[in-house]
Length: 419
Ligand code: HAM
Image (cartoon, rainbow, N blue to C red):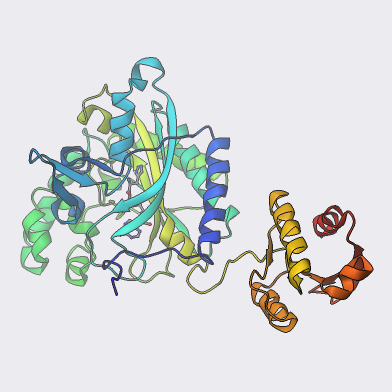
């Protein structure tokens, strides 16, 4: 038997209904906030991610699925969507027409990480990006939207952590302070951190290895190194969140795993998914459009980890199958023909109805109706055919009524629509 590749998985019926529900709520909310859908390829040139996400990040260093094309140029399955959205924003000249744009995109991402609970090599994100607004109002609106999304879905146990990562003005000073702090703790750091402590010391304070976590206790805080403009921006974001009653925790240790962030960064975290505690993450990336060849354009966005969100809502324990409204049990060839016509009529009207196609006994058809968990069963046997009446049984109340064959689909559809 050919099996799934490690780290990849099927989202099966029963779970998929939950995914569809989450997705449709996300679309409605994002569109209410003025975000428009953008559909992007899942493969881009490797350089886009190397430049966009940063060469010293885990993603670019070791997690990308990269293949050469026929001319030997690197192409990569996207590990995230932000760089692609920025590429598209630049490529289609949005900055020239109206630099303020809001996009969302939903789809699979690929990272060659070690698979574990909540961590897959193909996973899905709901991604939103807003371009052209430097004001902290954008940060507040983005975080408010995310808050509404999570509360609207009743997601248990989530807390939004927020921080500022400063700007090209203040970050270098923080970096220096951090480098000097870790320089005498090198022997306590993991090999990854030892290697990149100089190039990317922020990664060290984000490292999940217990020894590193311990070594960086008491490390300098970015909050103490923000320049006046970044401080003011952060303060305005915090006040805006307070005004809208968005709960948050200020977390000076939140650094995120991608290099493009400036100023506001945030993560929605949970304790319910073990080591994989982030359900969504995002922030400002005011420098990225320029880094990728566009005009200087402020931008901010987030991505929700769809798989982790679905897991928090019970995707792996509960069955989200939506039962059919009706099961038609027909006995005998003539009855089955009529029943099939009804089935097609109900389905065309938008009612989920099922029947037995094989001519099974009434007993096994009733079993089938129970397996489907159908709301009602319509029974048509030879007697019913002769009397011109079918029997409609409500499977919840167990009440039965007779329905005339003439005009039956109208009457049954009306009853089902009444509830
Ligand atoms: P990220 O933090 O790398 O950010 O990913 C966002 C979310 O995707 C994470 O919080 C997590 O829920 C989910 N995720 C990441 N890796 C995996 C995995 N291997 N398996 C399952 N879920 C995963 C970004 O990707 C940024 N592009 C977000 C952003 C948008 N920033 C600004 N705009």
